[in-house]
Length: 95
Image 1: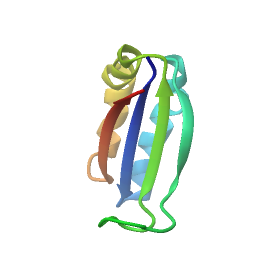
Image 2: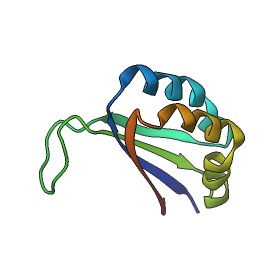
Image 3: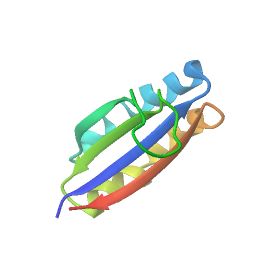
Image 4: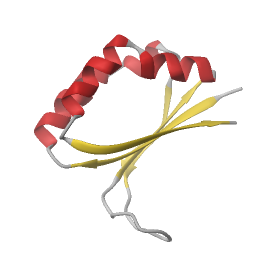
């Protein structure tokens, strides 16, 4: 069963966030992750979120692979750069 990590990101410090992005570049793929969509919200049809909020969806072969990515030492180290640079919510979905 495929698993999807869906992240919503509000960047507050682009320079620091770039260090996080650099730290995770190519990492999801090492765990079988495939990018599905990555981009900014262009229009809000319902709800209370900001236009410009970034959304990233990555498909993994399994829940275990998705969780291994999030738990990896490389991902955790990159997250240190994200602190204070963005408000992030990460969800796990299965399909």
